[in-house]
Length: 287
Image (cartoon, rainbow, N blue to C red; front, top):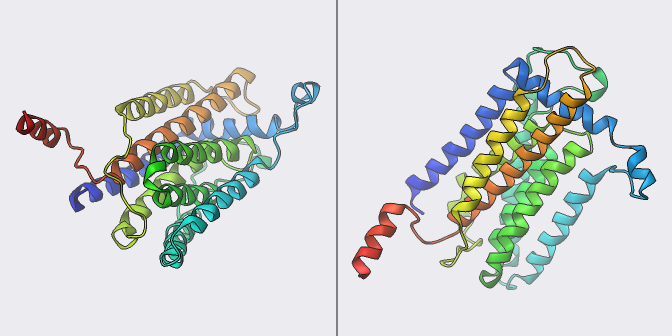
């Protein structure tokens, strides 16, 4: 990947964060859908339906996922050659810690205009999510540290980690949906900014990539915005149907984020120039 392509990806990642802020923080209906999804999560944390089926309540799931992601990262660090192990540790720290700090700083700097009413017990805006930033940084590190023969499976593992945390913190009632997706975008932009210096995370000429993930990601994002726009703008407490649609929009936004995350890492970590014009020219030359 050329420096120009890397800068383009950084711009797209930051652009995604700006769009999420503008839509879900800067508009009344966006704030409404965002807060309604958090209402749904906090109200349904302990539901009679879950208890009647013998299932544990969805409590503190957002604390379990970072522990699992940390354990996977530690295993991959232990698998590194002894001569590169400390370099790998420093690389992971350089990706994760500043990414979380940037998100924590943005929580303080970015304003949250009061455009709609929401109950005080769901808490104020925490845009973007520190939980999600931490796990997203680990997901990027895990894929970068993965042995090349395992990259095919590693791309799915990293995408699942991102999906699990973006859904988990919403289900646990800790964050609004826009706060999780924006954190992924910020961490990706940070990683791409420092990636020329993180050479220990090797690229692979055989990275698996399918346009299906990109198309599905955009489709899920469009459906998420459509459901969010259908949430009613009356005062809280909202109608049950509106809250259900808001939570469904949150899940679709998480799916869109993880699918586009998968597409991005398989593009960036591949040595091939994936521009369609270059590929057509190479095919023509081979013939």
